[in-house]
Length: 229
Image (cartoon, rainbow, N blue to C red):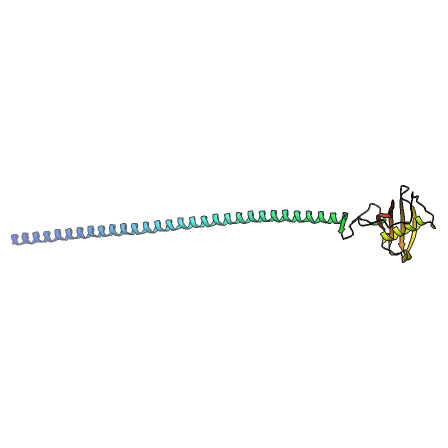
């Protein structure tokens, strides 16, 4: 009996020992598997974080590049607008200056050329003078007088009559449609000045004439008056 019990106990101990080994082995296997899982999870998670970080960095760089490009484009547009506005301002100023200059020239002197000569019209400092006309095509009207010329202001004299014809010629009026309001000395013995009007009073002129020996009286200046002095 004692031997049988001893054998039984030995077998029982062996079984318990194998069972303990199996349990320890199972525990170790479980630990190994758990470590593998942890390592795998860490690797996957690390890769995801790296990809996320790379993606975030890439997006940030793209956004920064986009912002820089946008800023550069805005600066270029602003620069172009400034240059455009400056150019337009310069062009506008030049155009205004040219227009003003042309206007002033037109206001100061108006010159016309025709077959007879050049007609120059200019303003006057006299408030009663609308314009001053000088025509290089004016010619002496001719004369019946001979010898040494003596200017006469006798209304019945030939010289007076020729003065009136010279005034009518410059005024572009017929002597029958003209009143002589004044005729007197023009600053020297061979110069005269006269004021004439059309009979309806719509045209009033003050005309300067001078004597040309052998050719008669020649108009030198015509002033168009606003009112009869």
